[in-house]
Image 1 (tube, protein in one colour):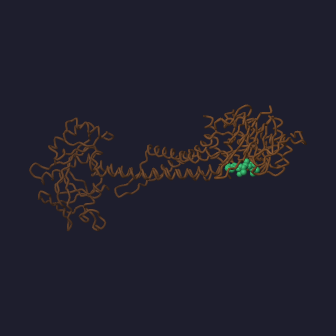
Image 2: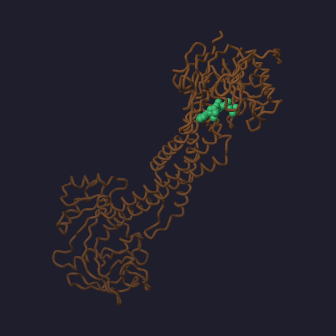
Image 3: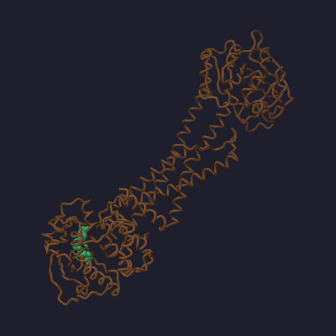
Amino acid sequence: MFNDLKVSAFLAARSIQRGGRGRNAMYIVIIALVLTNMIFLPSVIMGAMDVYYEQTIDYISSDVIIKPPEDVRYIDDVETLLATVNRVPGVVRASARYPMAGSIDFEDKTVAMEIDAFNPRDETEVTKFHKHITEGDFLGSGDRDQILVGSLVAGNKDDIGEFYASLGGATVGDVVTVRYANSVVREYRIKGIINTKSYQADYMVFVTKDEMDAVTGTGGAQATEVLIKTVTNEDAPLVKKRILQFGVGEDVRTWEEALPDVVSESIESFAIINMISVFGGLVIAVVLIFIMTTIKTFNNRKQIGILKAIGLKKGIIINSYVMQVIFICLIGTVLGSLLLGMMVLYFTTFPIEFPDGNVTPIVTWSMIIENTALLFISSAVAGFIPAWRVVNEGILEAIRGG
Amino acid sequence: MDDYISAEGLRKVYTMGMVEVRAINGVSFSIRKGDFVGITGSSGSGKSTLLHMLGLLDPPSEGTIAIDGTDVIPLSEAEKGVFRLSRFGFIFQDYALVPELTAEENVSLVAMARGDNADSYARRARELLSRVGLGDRTTHLPSELSGGEQQRVAIARALINKPEILFADEPCANLDSTNSRAVLDLFREINRTMNLTVIMVSHESWHIEYCDRVVRLHDGKIEEDFRPEKRDLTITP
Ligand SMILES: Nc1ncnc2c1ncn2[C@@H]1O[C@H](COP(=O)(O)OP(=O)(O)OP(=O)(O)O)[C@@H](O)[C@H]1O
Ligand SMILES: [Mg+2]
């Protein structure tokens, strides 16, 4: 058995070494491109997902988020909750959000939207809004007549091509009128413009919690969410578990659990797109290898017949072709991995600019290993079949048949 | 001794649609060990068919074949393979050398497949190549050899496993008379020095002078079976 494999390997090696080098090089390059093609699109999608996840953590939900139980609008006694959560090991800081519906007027424009409020000191430790103020400044603790406006809300003078209603180019220092749902009307000076590149985050406006308390009147502002930042590298599910152990009765979710359904659905769609691209790559590889082996074995029909007549086992001959295919796949996948590595390196230095942020493709070892394995298995089968067919032809047909 | 190879009532029928072709139609004969047997006859007379049956490449439709006391008809494909590998050597009109192997590698391939020791088969391959007059061509690829040289490599290949019987089907068909003579001289020499039984199909009448015995076929039957008289038995080394 071992000797048979040795003879197959010998035949395969000589055939690769001395037969049609140019053609083999071409096969190798195609396999490399197939692997690259199988992995590159998924890696870009994974990169895009990663950007989205990061934005979700940085601006929308932080690492862990607490919401009121179902059918309840507000979190009860948020001050006590914040105090409790801030004591939980692994928690850096918790920041509550106090939204109220309303509309914002500026010149002849009106945008109907939720006005959100937070405690700026807490918020800077939990989200990254304060790092993405492109004009003006972030809110300070005592600010009462000032407002932070997302860049998509502020908009541009030339508002053609904007997806959402905007204020048509309001900038820092402009005064806007906010009409709250409870009929309170306030005038605010725009203190800063938020520009995070996240659609969701850039379509928000914020005032301080103190201001919202005043707007709400009796009882003060009411919180609907508490965003919780965990210590770097701390496991979000673990922190969630600890929070629950501290007796928190609200709805506690990790950022992943809090992703909207649309997102999990799109993840599924991406998985299907990935599968199609992987499948397409495999089909190319299989067809290529099948044709390659068919041509090789067919050209060698007579020689195969005579080797069989002399007494060489069929297995030895078939394996010599399968081994050539495996060799081509091996070099091809190594080359493909190098190519991918170079592409990832390039796009890390010069990320692909998506409207939602700069996307760097993410290639994991498991992606490379899985796809390589798939490529190897399907190629080996695609090489085996024609070799098997020609080798199993009767000796005489092979010898006689021109 | 006379019955080293013995065939009894051999028939081979090919059915082509409605037509039955009796390629071999009742052939019985036996061959002595060490004989140089020529099979001759006109085209389509059944020479190749008979050779293939004796060489265990094609089973007869009817009849028995015994080789060195073994009834070979009931053997399985794999057993026939082993039999061929260990006891037969084959040479065809087509040299069919593996194009990516050198002369030496082509010759040693079969021994390698048999699991022989690498040193011994390499040495033996070189020996055989010198013997067929290609001692200085061992590293050449088939594409770098002439037709006659390639056929001589094929002969060396057929001899590597020290076969008892050498089957040759028109080994000189693609060769000019000089190269044919070289090949036939070689056959006769190994037939004599190695006590190798040679069964050679040919339709060239002048080849008869190399044979101990000639079997002439006609329409699948033995028409004539004789021992040529004027035979030059000197061996040219
Ligand atoms: N596979 C086959 N199917 C049908 N008929 C066949 C087959 N092989 C051989 N024959 C027929 O059997 C007969 C004998 O063929 P064979 O090849 O043995 O002749 P031959 O004596 O070797 O001829 P040649 O000198 O041309 O090589 C021929 O009539 C041929 O057409
Ligand atoms: Mg013939």
